[in-house]
Amino acid sequence: MKSSSKHTILDYMGKKLFRTPWIWMIVLVILYWVSRFINLTELPIFTDEAIYIRWAQIGGRDASWRFISLTDGKQPLFTWIMMALMRVIRDPLVAGRFTSILSGFLGMIGMYALGAEAFKNKRIGVLASALYLICPFTLFYDRIALYDSLVSAFFIWNLYLTFLFVRHNRLDVALILGLTLGAGMLNKTSAFMSLYLLPVSLILFDWRAKHIYIRLARFFGFAFISVGLSQIIYSILRLSPYFYIIAQKDTIFVYPFSLWITHPIEFFIGNSTGMFDWLIGYVSWPVFLSAFFSLCFLKKQMLEKILLLCWWCLPFCGLALFGRVLYPRHMLFMIMPLLILSAWTIDLLIERIKERAAQIILIGFLCSVNLFSSYTILADIKTAHIPQSERNQYVDDWPSGWGVSEIVTYFKEKTAEGKVSVYTEGTFGLLPYAFEIYLGDDKNIDITGIWPIQEDMPKGMAEKASDHPTYFVMYQHQAYPFRWRLKLISEYFKGLNKNAVTMRLYEVLP
Image (tube, rainbow, N blue to C red):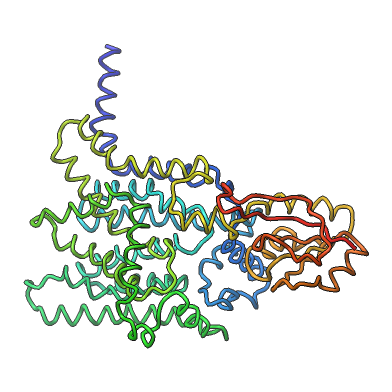
């Protein structure tokens, strides 16, 4: 009897319990939080993180600087969230990265909602969330304090609400869509892409239903409300005198039309080739091909698949056409429709292949590359399988912050003994911001940035060195001017040191 009872319980778990979507979502949620917190601070603070975290510190303490990010043309929502979290999380770096973890969690839940709504299939929603969980692209950016995970979260929910809007054409959905569009625009200019793609949703419009003109008028009327509400929310930024800098900053990364029209396709091939390499490097060939395999089934929910494809293809081609300075993170939000399409294919294969062992082997093959890449990110960021351009920016080259924590600890020990002066190479970025983040409240230390580095040592620097311990930290140039009187104290290599770049701490000699 006991053996029979045990067998019945196992059968129930296999056939009933673990076929319930919410059970799988609980498992995925647990795995999400574990995967995002493992070795969270192994990657040291880097340039962009230092900037955003320092902004959040300043804005959180002084209400007049709530829009501080606009001084560099960055929208403030991400830093606003960080300001709130810094009140409850002591370590500023953890607070900044936790902001992205929360954003990624919102995105993973959104993937479930989007997959379930797009194809009216909860299992596709679960599979889409699982693909989001194991994707090295999302894993990497959910663990660093950059805007892009929040951009992706808004993109996912905007797409979900777009499906609801075109199918039900309701005022309440239009209002919520307007709110999420506007909130996304408060975070980054990329959020405007969801607004530009709104007309594409007419692919799903029921053109055969009665009263077509009335329904079209209703659709455009509610769409106008969504767009108008989003612009009202975005207009909050106009309260700052630095609002105009956003447009100037955007032209650094995207060609303005007046300049683009002089060479409309000159950079398209190069940009699209580089972007595609990044895409495959992060998403993997199996997942990418499985997404397009879904399009082979013309009679199965084809309109939904075309809509999802457009929400990937149009932003991708648009960035390839207009992109001026590109990084992989700029296309993070674009991969979400591909993950949904890949989830559709996996669901189809599970449905068609009844043998459990064959299902496991096939799913394992599709996910193996992403699982391995994600494992390398969690296990050792120095050897992680990420695109080389990412390694240069975050791990191996001068923007990375290897050595910052050790130098901060050294300065804390020195300030406990008395007054200390610190000079840094650079006035904006990793230094001096990383030191100001952790040492800015210490009254025994003054931190001064220097740029550019001149041949002669600044007079004030030499004067302070004759009065109390004074230090100089370099991390961009690899040699200091020979006229400077410096003594090397410590040197820290960047990542695997493939670029022979180091951060160096010098004592200034009187």
